Image 1: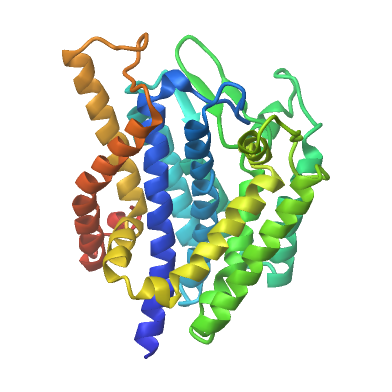
Image 2 (image 1 turned 180 degrees about the vertical axis):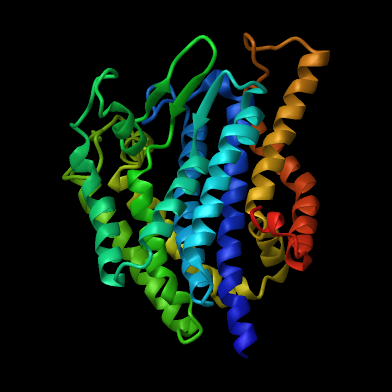
Length: 381
């Protein structure tokens, strides 16, 4: 019975990871083959179709889930009595190295511009958690809440590029270039301060997955967290009180009203952005342990198959997209300037579905090899 409960708890985490990996795949296919219809942050609802808008909005759930569940996994690792500081710092540095090398090359096939994106942000958050996790639990929880709920107060603060505080503030809160030259550019796309708050909250939520907490208690907790987050989002965002730099306004139709309401800032993630994405994640985690899902073994197997080796799948799909794009350049002329692209968002979902099927078995096989292998490097993936 204890083994069954443990499996159910871990399955819910891997299931959530697998789900957001598939959503992420759609967004990365969009960035490869729909870039001629690129969206801004927040999006311009006057020029963005509903299909493109909600495809991009779905991708907003990925980074918060990745970072939050990294914090949960860190707590689970620490609960075994192992050295969490060393574990997090080494893996954090490894992720930053991956961002600078394999991930950067996978996007453009060059190193002229290095984009510090989600992998860098997760790596830096892991290092910070590795340094802070021994602080009292209440202090960690308070710090996480203060960062997540309070960082929007920092929005008016900015520094000129020649100011000594510009690099620090760019890393923490305002995306921008750290280096610009003819040889190489280095840009922070994911300012990390709000993500540090998210990983701390994930770590503090880890005890919900301990063996002494029943599935019923955990589902109740996630339901309450999810509903609280979504109701607070509705109040703060609906009334334009606080938590999102771009206020929404009444539009000419219900669809445009919804698009404007959900048009949220991701870089850095606003409080409204985090409330709706983490709120949705809590409800999915609750659903993952329900009878509705637990009886669908094939669905669980597929999603946990992707979620059990997320970094491997992340690299695999990026290089699959690079290979497809490079092959097209060998045999065809680009049809959108210098880019290859499709003309409807539906094609993006279809391409993503085909890629998901093609990459499922390699990912599942790697996860099985990783579980059985004693090679430490594999655990980093």
